[in-house]
Amino acid sequence: MPPAGAAPRAFTAGSDPAICGEVVGEGLPVVLCHGITATRQSVIHGSRALERAGHTVVLYDARGHGESDPAPPGQGYGYPDLVGDLASVVATAVGEGDFLLAGHSMGAHTAIAYALSNPPGLAGLVVIGPAYDGKVSTQSLAYWDGLASALEEGGIDGFVAYIDRFQAIDPAWRDSVLRFTRERMLRHRHLDAIATALHEVPRSRPFETLEQLESIDVPTLVVASHDAADPGHPYGVAVAYTEHLSEARLVSEEEGWSPLAWQGGRLSREIAEFAAHL
Image (tube, rainbow, N blue to C red; front, side, top):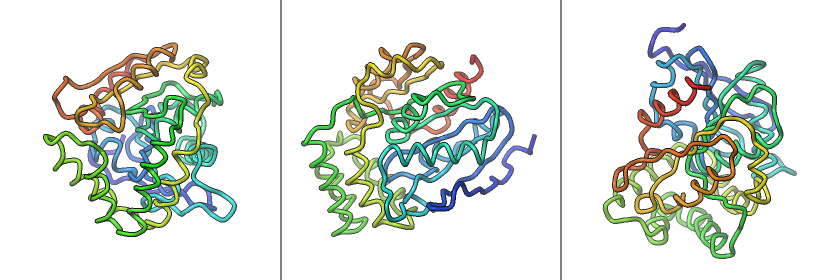
């Protein structure tokens, strides 16, 4: 096993678009999928706890995000393309053998859509902050279109200001939310691709109904956030996923605490404990 703190090994999956990622550690692989407008650093927030627990950690930037290429002509940012990229990452960075798949928000929906295809080797799922419940409302699409326009017209400043104005952030968490929102946006090479993704991802359905989740027969850990700090990932949606997934367990932070999804070290330890009982 590499020494603790060993440098990650870069990889590229696919070529059009090229999906950039990194691998560190040895052991049962954990593939991490991030949310929309985030990057590969945003799932476990730089924690090395999974690596220290004896896992290979696979992180990658979704198409158009971070260091990865934008969607080429004729393709887009819907879930079929995101699932295809994930399959390419698994083939490149994991190969054959068992692995654990974890994702936050858009990444959680991508992981669920991938699991619905019954891929070989999938030993378990970690679904962090799901937001899609089988319905796409006009109100939700108006929010995402407005956020995309704010980025197109005002850049990162406009993007952050829109979040501040429309996301109904609890005042206790406002400064933290706006700070890490700006930090994650600064990691992107292609802000125009992020704006396009903001229009397209919310219109794409990773699955049609929650009842489809009942066909997923791998152990699943669902990570919920309370609504005061993270209203964009409703607690009730995480509960609904837990109720429909046949082998699911729900975890969350204590009410009033910083969301578990924001705590990289604690989240990593929850994932490692879950993996230890697969």
